[in-house]
Structure formats: structure tokens, C-alpha cells
Length: 257
Image 1 (spheres, rainbow, N blue to C red):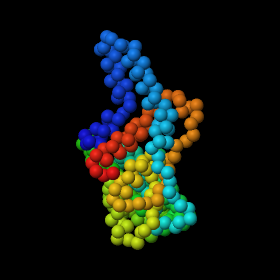
Image 2: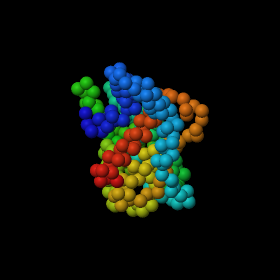
Image 3: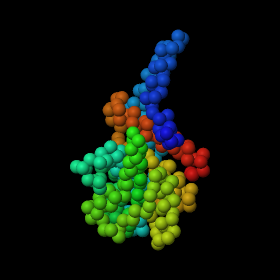
């Protein structure tokens, strides 16, 4: 288990619900107070309102200018469901280059839109390599192949997209983009990623002396009465927020922000 996998394990909100229940079984005093705290914790981590508030505070204001023709639009990778591909690897009826969508797929569609709308001349994206050793069997998924097929089907020409290299994390993408714009005539460019991920991504770009304009996707929806009802999605949203917060703190102390 790598450090990132261990961190994902620790930010699972349900882990602490389980630990709290186990703790309640063995203690003799203050059971009611602890039980009420546990209920409050579970409620707050299982409603989407909690993640909504975090996202509103955490987001970075967009600087995209529709009147500018950008030299490139930079789309951060992770725009397809790699786990879906890995689980179906070897099945003859699943094409290798099929594009399995996920929540972050909005990023690549935004990039395609900006190129087709002539807001950007070039679409840049890293070739995200997802690797997994499952039951002793090594499997690998290359997102770049699926992305190139998708953008081609959407009318983007071969000379309008550049898959700039292998990436496994945002830091790799920042390095790849810096190297690309240094060797090419790219002065004004637009960074596209999910709203909740933008703060960490932009901080990494600025740390390397890069200052892109930004456009966020997967923006927060309006609050409704359902935002206060516990749900599986609420837990997933809370975990996503914790992932970004802990990731930001971790990269800060490593000197990458």
C-alpha cells in the first residue's frame, strides 16, 4: 500500500463512524454524550450540504476571458473511468479504446468546446497511466488513447490536440506543461479542471512560475431540501472534500505549492 492509498483509507468518513461504534461498546461512562456526537458527525458527513459549503469556500474565481483566443487549453487528466477499464480488461466485447465517462469527463468536453468555438487553438492533455496489481495480475490503462479517439469523433483535428506525455499525478502535468510551453509558442493558455480541484492545481502551476487563466467544471449545484438528507452521495462528496484539503496540506509541506 502506497502513501496515497493509505491517505485515502484515513479520509474515509465511515471509518470513524465504525471506530466510534466500537468505542461505545467498551466505554461505561458518558455513553449518551459520545453517541450524540457520533450521530452529529455521521449526519454532517452524510449530507451534501457539508460538501457544498466547503466547495463554496474552497473554490477559486474564474479568470477565463471569452474575448481572448488562447494559444492552448490545458485539460487536467483523469477525465475517464480508469477503474471501469481495469475491471473489464480482457473482455473481448469491450473495445480497448472505448471512452468510459465519469464525473470529471466534463473537463475534456469543456476543452473540446473551447477549441471548436475558437477560444483556443490547441488542446493539451497528459496521458494518464492508471496501473493496478489485482490478485497478482498487473493491469494498465492508458487514457490518452481513449481521449484521442473521443476528440477525433467530436471534430477535433489531429494537429489541434497534443498528448504531451505520461502522467500519474497533477505534479507530473505541471512539469509536462512547463516543458511544452517552453519549447513551443504558447503564451496565453487556459487551465480546465474540476472546481474543487482548481485551488490545488492552480497553486502547483504558480509554484512553477506558470500563470494560466482558469475555467472550472463540475460546479456546485444549488442547495435544496435534499441537501440536508443523508445519502451515499453525501458521504462521497465529504470524502472528496477531505481528499482535496488533505492533499493541499500534504503538497504544501512537501514544497509543491
